[in-house]
Length: 397
Image 1: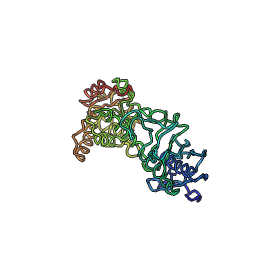
Image 2: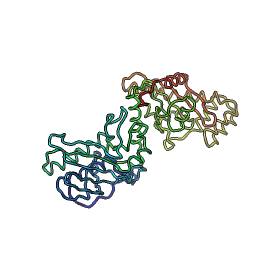
Image 3: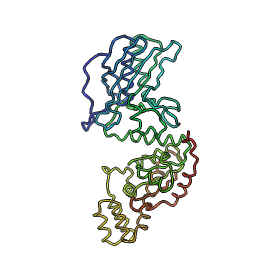
Image 4: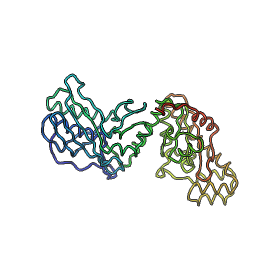
């Protein structure tokens, strides 16, 4: 509770400045508001310890003090991570509760989303304040109550004035979280350029699909793949999961969650890497697209002039066109799909063996912008048919 000077912002091993999650901001604001409510003294700085063990020295703004309530805010700072919530005001309003009430009650106000579908961290009807931020808020409020020898009830309401506008730029609409952003964070820290937040989002989307009764995980690395699914097969984009570069990790998560089937739809620029056993397709981890495409050309009898032209090409779209000119597109793409399926099934089998689960059936569809459908596994059509015919009435509520 001391008013020592703020420490320098923490940095990671690469010298990038760490940020603090919306959960950390909510906990700090709640601690400061509770302190002001119980002591009657203004507090414009507060410190909390995040679950990661890093201290957060927060500046307190927008203070409003009344006899039975106090409201204040912490401005979200995502550090050197590109975060759309940076600059948002995370507001906590605390009030006295009657003695008979539960000791600490946490809810969301304006700009904090409300859960409407199952499979998320909070149940339908609850504010989208995840369990770790709730635990952090409770811990900090209890610390102040003990300090002030107060044993009555406290109501905590978290709001974000900019939240509803910001939510349109997040995954919340896809997840059925309405009216604002989520209060998130498991470590309390935002790691610059960290992939963990994206992996957490993928798991959340998969978990929600499972809770809604889906047995097939329909997955694509990006929006183009989802668009292809819609245009080619009439499959609703909201029923698919975007996995970015994390193809292997997404297979693992789907298997852990108990999906029986897994359909991957992607552009050849991503999936050609999977044919070489690369399960995280980010370019920083390996980029042998043209070499793998050239290998498929050799395997299917293309002339050496074609192979050399592929190796000199800049994109897989151009490479496919070169193979087309040699008359070998169908054969080459079939071979690429064979290798993709080998690696996808190998990953799924390894995960099943480690967790003693039944093997998850894998299917795959590969396309290009210029040629459309390039190749699909033998079971892909049946899986698509099953997906399109599934009842999705739960999405109509």
